[in-house]
Structure formats: structure tokens, C-alpha cells
Image (cartoon, rainbow, N blue to C red; front, top):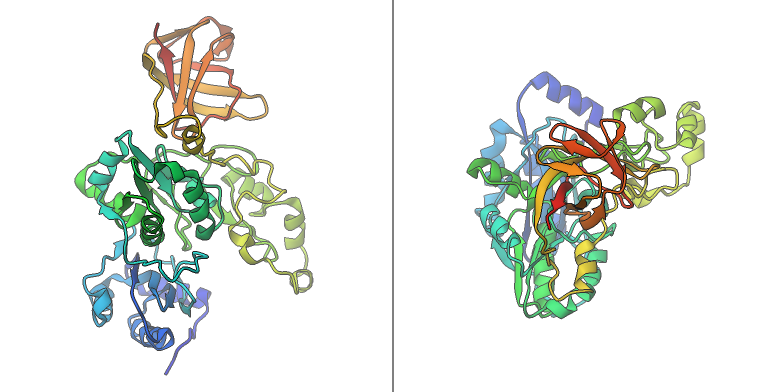
Length: 452
């Protein structure tokens, strides 16, 4: 019985190209009691290998978590292999918005202690006692409720390139880190707030929602099927996307675009960019954001040191990385000291900061204002913001408000301004306006004129 891959990733990619058949990238999960995860794993490998299904799958006593690539013509046959198990009858398969035939090039099924590492050792915690599932339309509606707190239960390198407007985005590298942080920060809101959460495909929130119910939170909700299912539903139903930017995914694509907003920056030059890459030095392989220009200049490396190593003979490269543990460095995006703009995508937890100052985490500034334009760029070294004026006009001395899901609400007075590159006193529709901004702005930010 074959329980291993016989082809390399390169050989598999070549065969896929030769076949010329469409493949579907999909994901699914299920929490269930599995008595013998190893046998379960072996049976799945045999069935899926016969269907040319590829992917990265984890199984444990608590269930299954899978991200896969399946030939479109074998999709129904693949579904039948799931229906064999009672706990997967009628299971939702999240099919990716963007398809890539090379999203997975091997079939890897691993037996783990848990399908989602949570760091919990509480026998009284029931993972099946989950929060209320919300579809895209319901999710959009509850986000508008001022009594709602929305939390992103993904890692910092995921929320950096895309997140829901107004979400709390913890600066964590693992799911297990986020649980105690959020629990501590929201202790005062157990009784009277809607705790709404989301993640990529729903599996982390399924466990998180059960955990927070276990901790005594009364109104717990989660986005059904995660961002993947949300993106599909807003397309099918013609809904407004409250999610901005890219959805990070754990396959070779490294992301699928939900909206045109680019809310992150190249970690090497600061240019607006949300394209992930792995350092070409096999002894590093750091995941970071790199624009096309830096990719060409740095030869897909995160630092000049790594670039120099890639020019060495392969034997010398192998010696340098021998015995060196890179481990989770692959996903320590923006944490390397070599990256000049390593903090460029940090998302300050403005909602959490507000929670410590007010009784309403989503309190809005109650001022009369009118929309004037939008942010185009932020020059980090100079501390200068560039805006396009779309309507109305702005004059020297006007009081303005810069507002965005990450920036929050920031008021300034226009004491000095440049219009289309020249110092001026007035900007009108169509003008490019620049002025000093003492904080980082994002492309999702809007510029308002405060009315007396």
C-alpha cells in the first residue's frame, strides 16, 4: 500500500501542465472524535492519491483540517470519499476565489496532537459548543452595530495584507498567543457586547468561539467559512466587501485578492505592496513582502547577506545551513532586523486602545465632516502624506480628519500644504495635495474636512 509521494514537486508540476486539466484549490475542516487518527490518515491517503488529490492535511483525535488541490473532473468523486464518514456528510468545501493549478504539488497528511494548536489543557472545554455562524450579509450587518467588537484570529503576517474594517488585529505569530491576549483585553465586555470573530476558512474561529463561550462571553459570533467563503458570497450576492486587501493563504499562491486596496508595504523600500515571497537563500527562507523592483535588485533575497550566500557554490551553501534550525522563521514576516520597513505593516490595535479609554470599543468621533479625498502614499522618511482631492476644496488653516480602519480617526490643522508639487493655499478636485502627517497613513484612509 503506497502511503508516500513518488514524484518530486517539480515532476508533479510538469505532469499537471502536460495534462492541461483544471484543478480546484479548496479547504475544509471538521471537529470530531477520531479514535484512530493514524488509520484515518492512511485510508485518506490511499483514496485521495487515486484521485490525484494534493494538499496539506492535518488529522488528530479532535478532527481534520485540510487545504487541497483537486482535479475539477474528480471533484464529486473526492466529495464521496468524505461522505464515507458520518461527521463529514454534507461538509462545506471552501473553493478558492482564485485558482492556481500549482497551489499544491504533494499530498501530505500528518497526524498531530491537535488540528489547531491552542495551548489549552482544559478537559472541561467543549470545542463543539461553538458560537453563532454568520453568512456574509449577516456579518456585514453586525459590523455596523456599535455594540460589536470584531476580532481577527489570524497571525500578524496575514492581517497585515488584508483585514475587515475596524477589526482588532493582534500582533501574534500563532493562534495560541491570541486567545489569552484577547481574553484579557475584553474581560469587561463579556455581558453586553457582540464578540464577532473571523479567520481564513473558519477553523480557528470555530475553536475560538467555543473558547470564549467557555470563558463566559454571552454573545459570540463567527464568520461562517471564514474569509474564503465570505469572498465567494459577496460576489454571488453582489454585497459590499467589508474586507479590504488580500486574503493570505497557506499554499503556493500566498494570497488571493479580495479588493484592490493595497494596505501593506514592501519591507525593503516602503513602496505600497502586498506580494509575499520567501527569501531565495535556502538557509533563511524568510517570508516577507517584496515589490518587483526590490525582487529584481535583491534577487528575491531578504538581505545582502542572503544575496551573497546565493552566489556561493551549492556545496558551500549546504555547509553554511548544516545544523542551523530555521523553524518558524519561514512565517516570521517583518521580524528580521535586515528589513528596513519591518514595521511598515504593523496594524496597531486601535480598537483595543479605545477599549481602555471608553465604554464603547467602536465609538466614532461625532463631528460634522465632508469627504474631500483619499490617501495615495506616505513618505516614511519625510513624514509626508499624499492625497488626491476628489471633491470640495481645502484651504490653508482648515481643520481636517484622516480616518481609516487601521489609522483610526486623527485630526490635524493644515498649517502648510503643497498642491501639485508647489506650496499653496488652496486645493480643489483633481489636485494632488501633500502635507506633513505625524503618523503613518494607509491607502484605505479617507481625508475629510471638518465643518464648523
